[in-house]
Image (cartoon, rainbow, N blue to C red; front, top):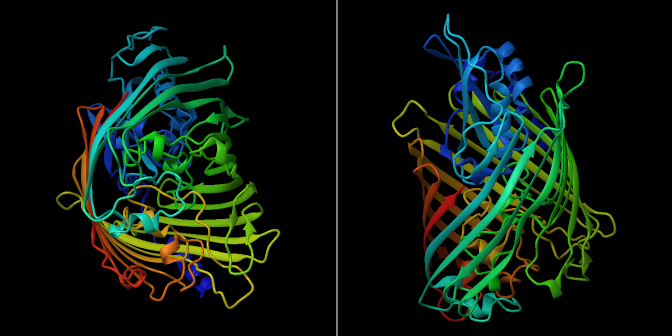
Length: 577
């Protein structure tokens, strides 16, 4: 069956390639976002729009190649605002170019981005004034030339949150052994506020006339909570470094200038694909004394060493990751080592294959027989995403994660298959999406351990499969059906409705929270979430969210007393500079 499945996907690719111009046009969708908000996200596609003699058109294949040679930014890479800004400056040096700028769009909150570049040619008879070495700047830019950029970082937010019957009114039971849960929520309301401020500085420059561009950033983040959240008692305030990394970009290497290298290390953001295994929002802990449970202000990994090589339509990468943990005295020191290859034709096909290993860890799995160390776990992760099938707005997304262990009898797997339809021509450009996701559970009747480890999954709107249910059932031993309807109300505003039906794969749920470690039913329940996203006045975002989780028999049968529906209301206001 698995072979038939992959053959089917490949046949769809072979017989559904749309014309290049149509394919590029259909890449432009989503909400226009502040570039700072998607730092470190994968670039799903790059669309280049040219203007000549008052008419706008899509760049053809030869123009795309010429523009890529100057932009140093291609699909399959990683978005960095400083790099994109400098690429625009370099492109403006071209004698025939009058003006250039770019915009960034995200179809989903935590997914890959679409980069749209606008460029205008000089009109007939028009001459181009020489570009000065130093440009006029505005806040937060301190210095910008065609070879360098130095900018302040100033991000912040505040939010108000109300949860009714958090943990289905069974907080003490669901948080047994959790060191931050000194006042877990029970039946009734919890209302609190959170805030953070992140000042910092970042820059990129060119070394002389070489093709070497060092870059880096540093920021300090202060977060606070005004009173008890659903886990922790009283107010909290905490400060620590967030970004602290350096890197070097070496673009346009080789005879045909089609090879680029990007090396970086330090505290920075990382995401693999759309967060199925590694999410940009799972790099750091935010609960307890850090007072940022729902704002999730810290997202940088404690250490990320990352090497990327771009060649033609291929991207090769290798990475080392260590997440930022909550308590210094209880560090698990789980470290991941991985690498892989991506192919992205910037039209409709996005393929990938990655391998990830847990290089070291003090943590271990609880099994029916003995504990298995995390160290030694291996994951193989192929990906097939197909966009705009037959030019009709149809799309398919799928990944597989196959796991085994070097030093223990452990084999598991997880996969998802989702398909949808985007109708840009309709009012509000609606999209419709269905996804089936499977994460294997353990069969206690076998000696082999089979529960899937979801690594660093996450991302609101993608792999937080029910923002309330996620807090108690995690991502192992889980089958979900997701239905999403989304509308792009304006270029800077979207509204989505998500429905999740969640089930366990196995009755044996060892490795989950204590009340549901052994199930008598598999139906966890349902969750409905409404999300509203509005970027206003360029650098500000309002994010509103309502979620209703209804417990099923698997939750209800774990308690002798009544459990109640869990309601969550969230209103967050962000500033990004």
